[in-house]
Length: 470
Ligand SMILES: Nc1ncnc2c1ncn2[C@@H]1O[C@H](COP(=O)(O)OP(=O)(O)OP(=O)(O)O)[C@@H](O)[C@H]1O
Ligand SMILES: [Mg+2]
Image 1 (spheres, rainbow, N blue to C red):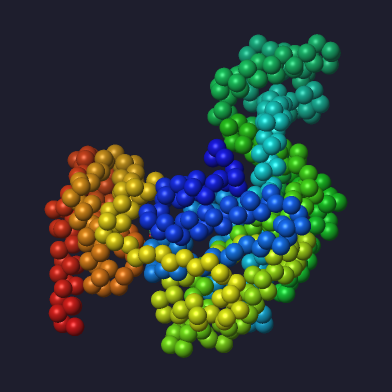
Image 2 (image 1 turned 90 degrees about the vertical axis):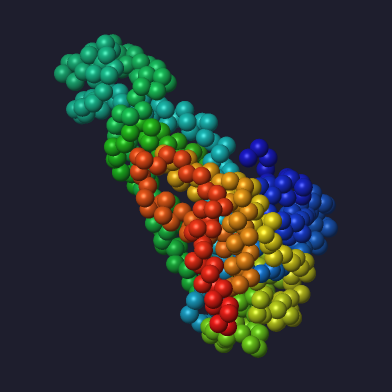
C-alpha cells in the first residue's frame, strides 16, 4: 500500500472498503470517521489528548450483509493493532472458557507483530546484503572450513577459480589461496546476481524458533519460562539444506531479526496497542440477555457483559509485555440483533457504544453488484479456479440477473441469509463443472440464464411446494 493506513482520510478509507463491500455506506462512514479521529487525536496537545476517548461503534443489521466483512477488510488494510473476536468465546471469570482480559492480551500480541514488522521493514535493505554474503560463504567456505574438509558441492559451477580452491584442501595454505577464495566468491556473487544459482542446494544455519514458553495464568498475569533462560543463551541453530532462493528468504528474515532492538519494539508496541488498538467484538448480540432467547447457557452471559465493561471503559490489563491501559482502545461491536435488541444489553454496556449504525438488507441490485464488482467477487473467484484447469468461464448479463433474483427469492421464501445465499447458489452452479474437470473436451464455459434456471428448477419448485403445503 502506498500510504500508511493511519493517515488515510475518511474518504480514502471508504474508497478502500468500496473495493470489497457493496453498499452499507453509513457503516463505512462511521468506521472511517472513528479511525480518522484517532489520527486527529494524536495531533492535539497532550492535555486535551488524554481527555478525548474513542467513540465506540455498534454495528447492527441482519445476517450476511457485511458486518464481519467490513471488519475483515479493515484488518487487512490496517497497520494498527487489530483483532476480531467473537463475544461468544468468552465466559465470566471462574467459568470454563476464555476470560475477557485475554482480548487485550491478544491485541497486545497483534501490536507486537505489527510493530516488529515495521522495525524489520526498515532493516531489510541491510539484511539483504548480509544474507547475500552468507549465501556466498556457504557456497565458497573460507579457509578454516576447508581445512575441516567441508566438501563444496559447487566446485563444478564456479569454474577456473574453483580448481585452485579445491587444491587448498590438500595443499599447505599460502596467501594466494586466500585471494583465490576471494576471487571465487566474486564469481559466485556475479552468478547469483545473474540468477544462475537459485535452484542449487546449500547448507545454512537456521535459528530454531523457541516455543512460546509462557504460561497464561487466569486473571491476567503470565509467567515466562522461556525468557528466564532465553536471554542468557545464544539462540539455537540447526543446519539445513535448502535451495539458494529459499535460503535467501530465511536469511533475510533472520538477519533483519538480529538487527532490530526488541526492547524498543516492545515499548513501542505497548504504546501502539494503547493508542491505536482496535478490537472488533463480533456477535455481541449473543451475549445479550433477551427474555425469549433460548439456546446456550444463560448463567454467565450477563457476567461476560460485566467483565467486558471495565475493559471498554478503561482499565489496566497485565500482559507478558507489560501493563496495557485500555482507555483509548477503539471497540467496534457487531451483531445481527435479530432476537436480542441493543436494549437487552446491560445499560452500562449500551452506554459504552454511543455510535450506532444500521446495516441494510441487501436488495437484488446489491446482489448483482456483489457478484461482479468486488475485487474478490464470487464470479471472479470461480472463474480463477476453473482457469487452473484450462477452462475459461464467463457469465452473461442475464445469468447474473437470474442468480441475483434467485438469491432474493430464496431469501424471501426460506431463510434470509443475505449475501451468503450467493455463495450457496454459486457452489451449486459449479458443482458439476468442478467435478468433471479436468477434461480436454471442455474449453470454454458460458453460463447464461438458461443454465442457471436449469440448475435450480428443482430447488425453486420444491420451495414452492413447501410454501403451498404450509
Ligand atoms: N455488502 C456486501 N458486499 C459484498 N459482499 C458481501 C456484503 N455483505 C455480505 N457479503 C458477502 O457475504 C459473506 C457474509 O457476510 P458477513 O460475514 O459480513 O456477514 P455478517 O453481516 O457478519 O452476518 P452475521 O450477522 O451472520 O455474522 C461475506 O463473506 C461476503 O462475501
Ligand atoms: Mg458476522
